[in-house]
Length: 86
Ligand code: SF4
Image (cartoon, rainbow, N blue to C red; front, side):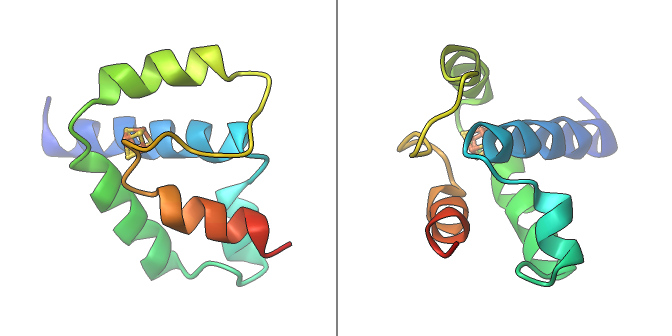
């Protein structure tokens, strides 16, 4: 996968991960709870995830929503911090 497509794919997975946790990362940046730089760093971490296929399976299994990201998620701390700080 080319770099741009790889990054776009992970931006999509990160958005889905946020969604099952009840978060909207675009909204988080709009209301300045997350900076654009932090969001881009999160996409970069996601792009280095060792198991995106496992992520996709996990997302399908948790489509109805959940409280915690999986342990494999490289953005678990960030996402759970955003969720818990409401
Ligand atoms: S589990 Fe991996 S691929 Fe899925 S959102 Fe987290 S870092 Fe990205």
